[in-house]
Image: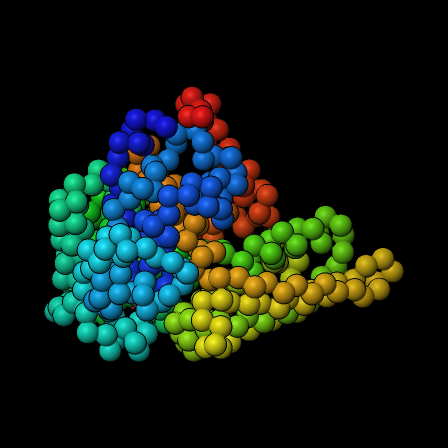
Length: 402
Ligand SMILES: NC(=O)c1ccc[n+]([C@@H]2O[C@H](COP(=O)([O-])OP(=O)(O)OC[C@H]3O[C@@H](n4cnc5c(N)ncnc54)[C@H](O)[C@@H]3O)[C@@H](O)[C@H]2O)c1
């Protein structure tokens, strides 16, 4: 492993620190010494990029962040109960991680708006300043070399403000005028101003706002997003590509999802799921090259399943002479466990980009996202090729560490 990557302490600050996904990532990565188990589910390892000394080791990650749930990460892990075992010493270390108070605006969920552990401030500009201070305090308390900030909180409602012309000057004016801008914008702007890379793992508009893109360019900060692709979209990218190459005409794809965790509860509300549905619906037409088919995606909150999400896919298509056929797929996943290795990978890519002076949207990490920004949506194998191509010159330079 390169000395630079190996010797670093990387700060990972997460908005939504005590949520199921973020908390599982912390508990799993802090509590497992089994290197083989750690690699499962990681695209970095799947793409053969893991053994070239390119990336910081996740054991060097120092976690912190923000949440409206002010309990320690140990209490959150016990409540979520997603990992079958979290040993005493990991619980002790998780017990030392407590979130900063969260910034909550009116587009956040009702639960967040009622949560007690929040910043109370005059304007959104104060919130950006407070989040910058949190980051700086975290950096000096933990002596970290670099920091990555992730937005991993609940999906927001749609912002009614037109954003296409929202440049930095206008955003600054709005931040002073309003108490209420989407929380994603506050965390993203604060991250960039505090010289941190920023990733949006959720279905929010943050990384499409021109002010955020130009701030990242100006400060020289890398960005990645949006909305982690953990299961259904991956299937669509792969099977959609297969149908296209085999010249089978898709007639319709029906996806039914059941999900019993807090995210499932929030996504069962139309106002919080509209951008998620948009992301879930956007991939197939791009991979197939046509959109004249029925595409229905249902997300149903079904509490008994907790984090053990399930989807049924009915794929109806026409074969030779126009004769109909269909494929049925039942995917039984674990929401937070599917996401954790991908979120850790995203941190590693963003940290690599910080070290190598990359700025703005990292299009080469498109394989990680339902709606990849900074690149076209392409079949999964092409997205992996793009990822490998980006790293090729670097791993040709570095000796293998095995
Ligand atoms: N797990 C996956 O497979 C997956 C895949 C793609 C996207 N996502 C997205 O990741 C996000 C997190 O998912 P989850 O299952 O962990 O949800 P969750 O509901 O368990 O966690 C969300 C956390 O965010 C906190 N929060 C809410 N508003 C906040 C704010 N303004 N500031 C700081 N914290 C805030 C909540 O208190 C909660 O702890 C969701 O937006 C989800 O759609 C998850």
